[in-house]
Length: 128
Image 1: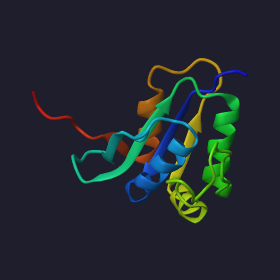
Image 2: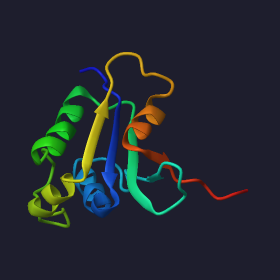
Image 3: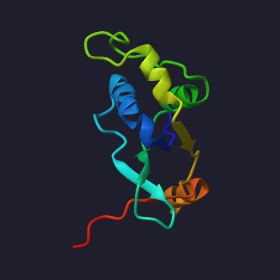
């Protein structure tokens, strides 16, 4: 299996649900930790960002299927049981997901160019 670096973006409306979906996949909690704002603004937060430089081809394909077809990925548990998000809520959260990936060499400005394509920017951090 080879690696396919991925950037995932989810709208703020769906971030809680998508964090639950990727956690059910075995990813860490709070996967979508970077906040995004409309370019040229400082608030409100409109979307959330995650980047995985070591995603496998299989994982990238699962994320794409989630974003395009609302396909539920394979998980160790059962959707809607033992604290896992329900299948219906998972599919609803997937409606806010966008997946970007790159094969081969990752351009140094890859994240910035993806954000620019959505007219997003990272939320400015607090001044030090």
